Amino acid sequence: MGSIRRSDFIACSADTVWAFVGQPEKLHEWFPITSTRVEGNKRWITLAGGITFEEDIITLDHDLRRFQYKIVNNPFITFHLGTVDVVADGPDRCLLMYSTDMEPEVLALPIAGAASIGIRKSQRNVRR
Image (cartoon, rainbow, N blue to C red; front, side):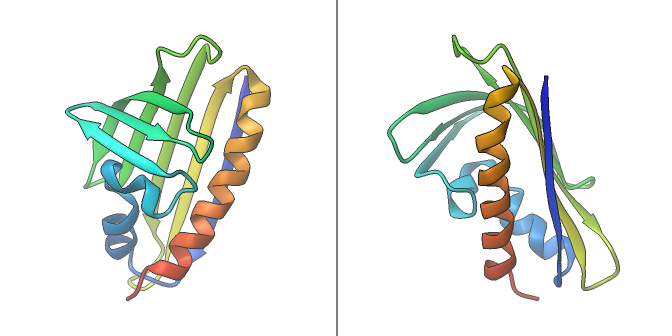
């Protein structure tokens, strides 16, 4: 199984960063995808090439600042669990962490690159 984790510190409160990244319907505002649609506990994301992935929202915990989802109904992906965590490190600093476990493992590699891009974009877009 492929397992990746990307993280970085952001000079901003955890609540502010969570308000930006903790909304499943707004993933396209910080992650390199073109659109996001949410209905109940389902989410669909569309990549720049037009490929759409269906996802089940597993966890959306605003107190813990954790979001988890899995890709479903995809003939090529046999297992997937994505996790976004925002962890406070003082009043004006936090850790934004994005991790994915995936099978087939080779598909975790492009997600690792996308996660790095998303974290950098989040750093630029949040304000104290």
